[in-house]
Image 1 (cartoon, rainbow, N blue to C red):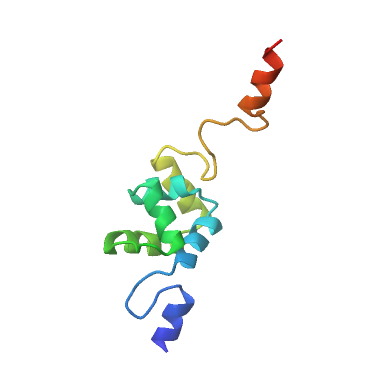
Image 2: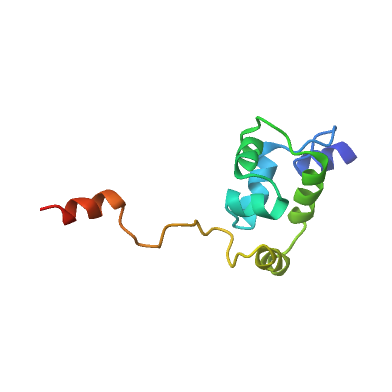
Length: 110
């Protein structure tokens, strides 16, 4: 019975997290891979590799991911502020509605 409940949470019998579970937690809390990486203290590429199923989170990261899965919206907002973010899905370096750099450079040439 415990095994079935664990599998429903995205955890295998050995305690490993499924790639879909990691992505599901991130999407549920509207986090970018970068925001999740900052919250867990790992690199962006590490989160990407977890979600692709190429690597598995280590024990410390697994514990933090499980903790995040139990967090509500208010707790998540608090965690985001703690790492210096106001929202989880913001991508740095690009303003909403900005045109691509290729479009701008063509208009300047005459």
